[in-house]
Image (tube, rainbow, N blue to C red; front, side, top):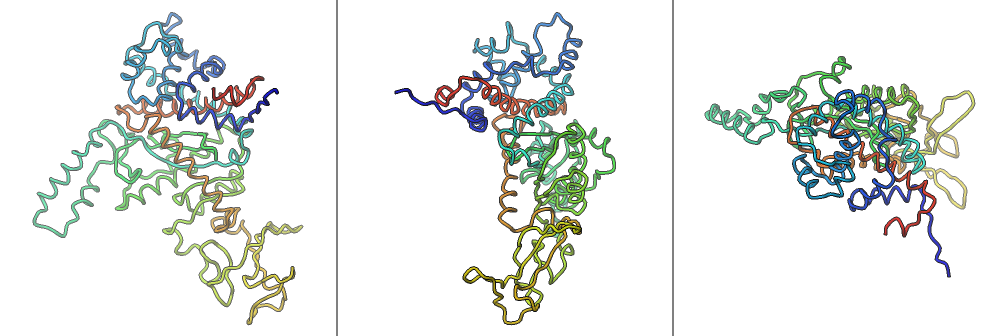
Length: 476
């Protein structure tokens, strides 16, 4: 009896490749060697720039240098010196990269600093190549765009715990006779806005603690695959001068939300300017992006159908009419504001704008028929009161999807993948705490992490095009 083989779908292959990517590094490397040809993926402009810099009689090819850094990200080796020692012990890795001899540490560092611009554009190129692949893997998830910000802690004096402790100790000594002085609050307010060694390394509140970090914005889709990276540095500010202010408040959380919210518009604009043919149905972000301007910008300027952003309680004191709507924007019973009316889908009528329809909360069904179980009805209609809401009149309250519904909850759950991607870049790919304060090096490392993730998408697609592929052969 001939055993039947299961032909894997592209989604199955992608899941397996992602699993190898995270849990079986040797297997992933072997698949990468078999299916990925960097010559086909690297733009000619990158090669021209590299070889015009070093000359044609170079000791190490561009592909060799790129392969070295891709392997570093796959293996999660934090420092180049450690990678060099691993390569000295592994002839297989040297052969894979085409190294007859191994470059020294300074050569690898110069590569990241000299070609950070080219690495950024290689990343953009791979984003273009992977967009149709991701749509084939899962159209619904690929149709979501998720935004978040984070930062990479740099190797600067200000991140040494002794730096803050010295400031606190000095203030305690100076104000020892003034117990009403909040020493810690004062210490925070006196810290410099940026690291002394690099103005792009800013004082931020990230992941629950203060640090000096190089801040960036990241866009992923619902699959957690990176779509865009933007460093919110001085160059970014110079390109968008009207959006940034350097004032601090007493609240680190407020500092963070202001930075996130103001970064949204320029990052989204830059993304669609780079990829004008890209279209997305839904935007997802956390409550830091909750502002009237952002909803209008997303739904009007960039034609998202849904903007799934939770309400920020700091912004909600005057945003909803009191006694007429609940916190999710649902109309309430005119006689009892504790009773929210029931959403009943969209209403599309000729000559009218699309509307959300809400029915009386006391409307019930018995033997398949509707009846109004209300002792004091507000209408003569036996079907109870119907209220329509018009999303275009208040995008924050009605952002293309009704707040508080299961559909809303299901959409917002997808936001977690962007945090998973950030964490994967920082931890398993080991870019979270670099031993450098050079912003070009940090920037190149993040783009190399994104490039490596995108290669896994291309790998799944290449394998799917192979005519002889079964589940057994894939996991053997």
